[in-house]
Amino acid sequence: HQVPLEMHKVRIVQKLFLPTVEERLKKMNEAGNNTFLLQNKDIFIDMLTDSGVNAMSDNQQAAMFQADDSYAGSETCNRLKKAIKDTMGLEHFLPAHQGRACENILAEAFVKPGQVVLTNFHFTTTKAHITRVGGSMIELVAAKGLDPVTDDPFKGDFDIDELKKTIAELGTEKIAFLRIETGTNLIGGQPVSMANMLEVARICKEAGIMTVMDASLLQDNLYFIKVREEAYKNKSILDITHELCAAMDITYFSARKLGFARGGCICSNDNELIRKMMEYVPLFEGFLTYGGMEVRSMEAIAVGLYETMDEEIINQGPIFIEYLAKELHEYGVPVVLPAGGLGVHLNASEFFPNMSHGEYPAGALGAAMYIAGGIRGMERGTISEQREPDGSERYAELELLRLACPRRVFTLSQLKYVADRVKWVWDNREIIGGLKFVEEPAVLRFFFGRLAPI
Ligand code: F0G
Image 1 (spheres, rainbow, N blue to C red):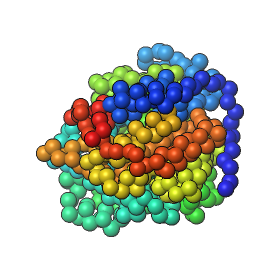
Image 2: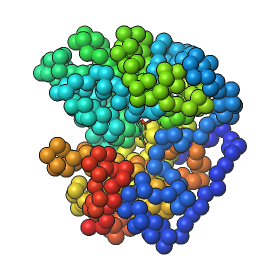
Image 3: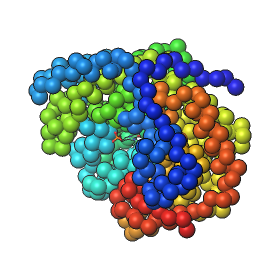
């Protein structure tokens, strides 16, 4: 099939090391079979995440040199503000140190105990902040989103009927806000269609419910709208972005993903909403001109946002991901299809059909991938869930091992190496067993928890 082309050349490189299989086995044991606890020096291909590890462009690096350090009234802040206005069409923004810091502020400002946040699908940090202030989340993703293999182009879509029913049942008072996650992370980086998002926004407006878009994975979603949604194929990425952001009350993002940099932003055209969140920025983050971000990062975000409007830049993630997904699928390896953004997602439930959720199949596959190839993925299954208030396990809808493709970082030959190692693990899957926790933190356990073979 079609070979994807890198639309950039490499100008700064980092040396990689490939430890022997004996060393990898030892390191995985030492890391408690949790890929988060591995050291980078022991990893050959790091596919843990696309967060804060995307390659920057020459123009981003150049912009970082002109960062303005002044505490108040910094030109860097003005440049970022202008970039948000130019690309998203949004007038006001609040800075925060990263995406979850935006979520903390949103939860503090808008979620009261007992209230509910409606969403297509939760993200780990979002849910942790909402539940921390006494709220909960209801997921309304259409059934197709949880089907690992379909040919539906927009598996992140909301189930519109379910949305209407839920609003009618709960009543507006009980709903803190509705959150749209573009490029739905935990179900495989699956995009949401423009038609669906605009319809959801319309329904919320009519019902008097605030809409919040998590645009962390918007870049891939924009590309998918452009190439998969007929009505938008002749629209520019810029026009699509403007139309989408205009339909939302609040747009926030992790700039570790959107903008190829580091940091976080909450944006809106509604100054009243901004005022309700503003006081939390100096309290938790830093002064309103930087919010805990390094000025150099803010310069990089500004340039990164403009670059995100370029289709030949934002197609680089999706086309390489699609290549790897196809390569694996054709060999018979179970992957989430159609390929989404963010990375390739291996379906661990199909690797180990006899393993229960409680034996953490996606965690086991993650440990195996490292041992077999020095490749670090991220468990996106039951380990990434949090236990119910009564302590029982909450089984994940999908047991996935995510092999993230940080943008512009890996070459085609590196992805071919990954494909080769995944195929080996697939062929030898019967030698892999389940895991159990030996150390289990109460919150976000997937970061620090340690596991051992059952
Ligand atoms: N929202 C989404 C959709 C995300 O994917 C992330 C982070 C966040 C919010 C939080 O942003 O990390 O800057 O605090 N996702 C990373 C990942 C961690 O690896 O998928 P953050």
